[in-house]
Amino acid sequence: MIDLPKCPKCNSEYTYEDRGLFVCPECAHEWSLDIETENSEAEKVVKDANGNILQNGDSVTVLKDLKVKGSPFSVKKGAKVKNIRLIDGDHNIGCKIDGFGAMELKSEFVKKI
Image 1 (cartoon, rainbow, N blue to C red):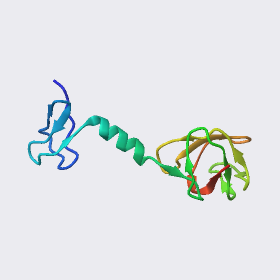
Image 2: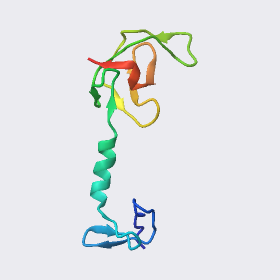
Image 3: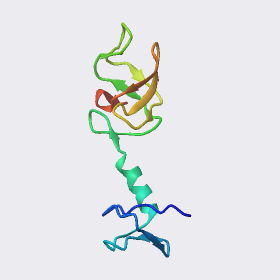
């Protein structure tokens, strides 16, 4: 049996498919899964401290000294980080920093180069 998605409007589980659209019989809402995936990708916008939009592969500069948990050293202000990747979570940038290795940073503490 095919698992149909719940209605995004009323969360009803009694949805059915009709000509490429999903329909909710309780609230008469119609939607497409293609639109849902486009919206979820469009919602994920990561901006730096200056409001510039960040993308995978960008280079950034650290704006302030950041303490590293479990290490006596900190990432110094002005450190350049190349080839970032955007991830989900509170720390939304995954990267490798020379001298520290793989780390996660918050976008509010970096600026795009």
